[in-house]
Length: 452
Image 1 (cartoon, one colour):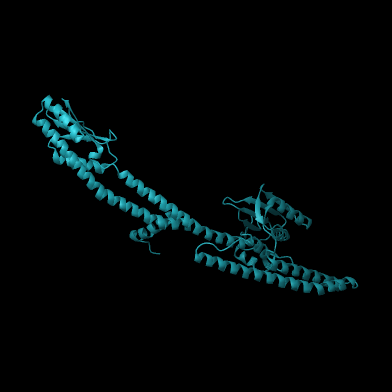
Image 2 (spheres, rainbow, N blue to C red; image 1 turned 45 degrees about the horizontal axis):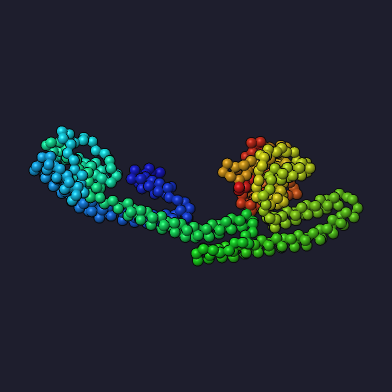
């Protein structure tokens, strides 16, 4: 395989990186679709305001203040006597709102403080540089409402304290506040609308998940937008069709089972009344096998049955199943974590777990049943045996109905190959799964994973 060029690799890298950082939920993506354009618009409007209007206003104000300061400096230099300075100070205070003071023998400061509003400082610096021939220094951070401007003159430093609003607009924070408030308000409205739309989809997903686990969802009703209601109505119709199919299949198999049990009972009675012989014993065994096959067919057809899902203590349930298996001749050990709770149908799950345990006991001498909590949530139950096992490439084949795998496991002659199929059907009906793996004991491991 030819290696990708750096440019091609970069083209593949960026989409993956962006996709990784994008929200994965519908709510997050919908919110991003609405909020991102609003945020970009607000940034563009704010940038245009500060770059054009706000900067233009600051420039005009700074030029006016710089002209007044230039007049003060020129007036002082034309007559630097104390009486003239006093008159200049009073005139600047009364007419221009400037506080002027002379510091004799001093020089300009060497350092400048950083300002958070650098465009205003740049406009003032440009205006002063254009109007003043003397060296100057100013500070816009020392006082919140004033500017400290100093000009080097022959006698020292002429210090001018000017109101900040003479050089910079101070109302820009109101504009930013209105923009931020509008953004927050629009985002809040968007969140409310998107939340209501996404909630209807979440209800549909929860209903589908509950039905997939075999639960009933009679309280579910279509909500939300027209398309979501249409999908919900299609789900309800599909659920009803599936439920009718399950009920018809169960009723059909129950009827067949009932019809077969009547002649089967008569045959068993005739065999019991017949004279004992080898042929009669063989007939009784065949009749017993037929009865067992009918029971397994019916159990497979019923699947999850009509039992309700409820929270069940796994320790108590597994101990009950283990006791029944031991009475049936199985020898096993338990490794169960305390306080394990799972949502399942107790009686149906008992039958599935009993099938796994008895199957393991039939093909191995040592059987270990373990139950533990999964790190990602949920419960895991394992059934291990030390029997001959099954080749890994035939694990899935073992779950097919009526598949006996005689050459691999030498299954019970009474079985019809439905034990694993029934067990997986039950577990998947609870939202979990049943898989096979190699057991640490050397045989087969059945793994049941149930959701939290």
